[in-house]
Length: 291
Image 1 (cartoon, helix red, strand yellow):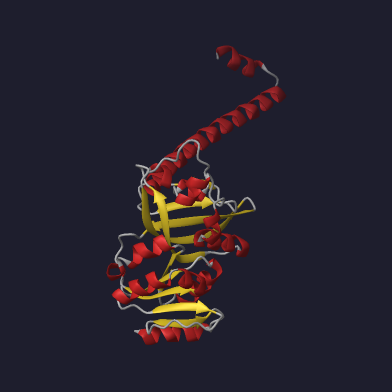
Image 2 (image 1 turned 90 degrees about the vertical axis):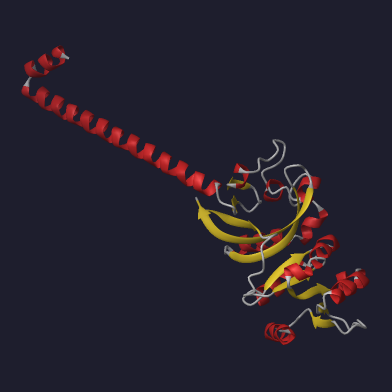
């Protein structure tokens, strides 16, 4: 250090000026580096706190791309995926169809999954979605198959010119109906029809989708708990399960609406046929008359 300052003092004026400038630049660089270090440390601590807060939420959040691959989530903080499972939304949620087929989207039943349908449409439109309610069959931590009701919202975002959805998944299985919006059970594997009906009714009603008989039966056996305003289905499902449906809705004195493009002889007062190409205002009016 002594030699360094002796050199500075004995150097020529021009050399002194350059040395002083170099010394000042070094000091500035060190100061900037120290400042950046503390900012990065603070940001890391803030991110850790934010992550802890998100991980402690009861609702689950997923950042997914258009292939349904999960990029970030707080779900794994409470339910670690198996090492061999792909990080695809259905697999991460332990959906029955995804687990048994090996990959979300590969099972035949995935074609009638309203969650996949609505998420795909959101990516196509580069837009949000909200109030999607669906029945799911999932494997819990003990590998037991359980029925679950979920509500999903999706927020479309762009990161580095790529589209993503922040999907919020809420378990509503044990949630009591708020009575502000009556709940309708729509039993159908026709996801396009379901989405059309859901978009029509959602401002006033909550529309829960069941895409198979098992899901429908589980909910209808608890109809008094769910407090369904009405039951809806399509012609194909009705014809395949007519006796069971009529018995279940009759027990709870529920109205059953069947969407069809054909003339149907239902032979029961509680069943009303509706055209698949329905007028939205007319459908709302029909349901309101049921109140």
